[in-house]
Length: 412
Length: 115
Ligand SMILES: Cc1cc2nc3c(=O)[nH]c(=O)nc-3n(C[C@H](O)[C@H](O)[C@H](O)COP(=O)(O)OP(=O)(O)OC[C@H]3O[C@@H](n4cnc5c(N)ncnc54)[C@H](O)[C@@H]3O)c2cc1C
Ligand code: SF4
Figure 1 (tube, rainbow over the protein chains, first blue to last red):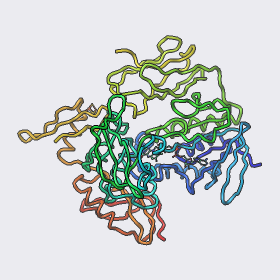
Figure 2: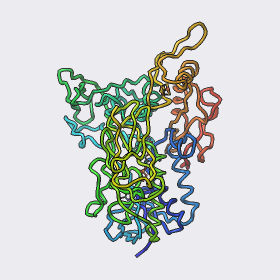
Figure 3: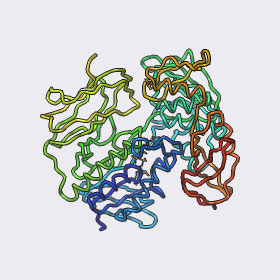
Figure 4: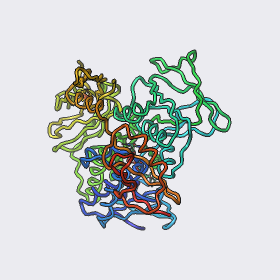
């Protein structure tokens, strides 16, 4: 059986950065990627705005991916298996995959990094009522068809969900000559970046309606239109105000789910909130030697954070493979009071800095984030504004921790 | 003109107008919003990213090398849509020179192999 110190599943930005992180410790590394090239979802994100934090300049998705794939290639110590679809992984760290060139592959790893990314919630996942005509796509599927295959999926478009992928696709479809009639958001605020609302919608006079949803779709073979209605505070549609909008295409941008199906049958614990693994600050899961990073761990809005997180996971996986990863203790990190989730969920280090990433449950202005350990404040950070769509972080000093950690927004 | 400041997540609603020869911004929470409001009012600039088709199939992603005036964006998109790329290009290579009279070129943001 082929053996590697560190095996990485997925060759997107998370997988590539994890590989480079592991190589810092000189171990042998393999990346298994099911696509024909490295880069993951970045290959289809042709707009710019990536890498401002990591590289200090604005790159497009393919450019950002190319920076990393070049480093992976030049490193020389990373074996890349393309078109290699991982089918399963076992508790004793044997990874099974198939590829057209290698056939059936069994690889023994000393440590594994999960970097499979996420997938989009579909019409089934949001229980869309009505017929099942052609013309309903997730925004990401439409993005792939447009940007990789060069196909325009429709001419008269309505978009449900104001997540960034939906906003970006509104501009993309307009650029290709389609008419984007409306973007709808069920919440009273957008989960997308302000910049995308201005530059993808306002610049092209595309209307955005908050607190509105699709109630049903119509069309036999091809979509002919959607019914929409405003919703109340409990998100229940007011059917007396239902309105018909003719269109041939509905794009759904209603959220992403980490792609963790491979973990079924393993002892890796999954968080019900993030839908990703529960990890410590090294991004080590509850199964020792298995690490997780990027969108498969929790959904990120900035690829820069993905790269940063994966470097940590890759380096730690290498240390584990070498038998050098330390874990002195294990304190739980518990979110409350406005903080929806915090990651890592456990801290094992007794010293050094640990960055805690978190998301809030709604928009907050002028609030202070507090981190306490056994009731004692270890860090406070005042923020101007926090929105659920923008991941926040606060850095703490691990040597100050005496027990379990709480993170919350202080009462005003 | 009414717009939203994009310089930080607060997203102040800005109102910009000309008063006695000077551009006046209101609604901004800080000075960055004033600067942004003035530039959006006088000469808003955008980096345009889009796709260009290969003459024998395939697509390559491109961007304007520098931001161009927002008023030229529709013309830039039309030019890109009508263009057919005849040759292979590397990342960073010029695909169309002088986009919509802006003086700025479209450069490839990925590798493209002509069929
Ligand atoms: C459709 C879509 C569009 C997006 N658009 C934007 C955007 O416009 N701007 C932005 O900032 N962020 C965007 N994101 C977020 C973006 O995904 C992240 O910033 C970043 O790309 C995540 O990196 P990753 O490596 O974790 O995941 P990915 O980039 O998704 O990479 C995961 C890789 O793992 C591979 N893989 C999965 N399962 C297996 C398996 N079983 N075997 C082998 N390989 C496997 C996949 O093929 C893929 O290459 C988008 C996400 C999605 C889903
Ligand atoms: S004006 Fe200042 S505070 Fe308001 S959104 Fe712009 S940068 Fe933020």
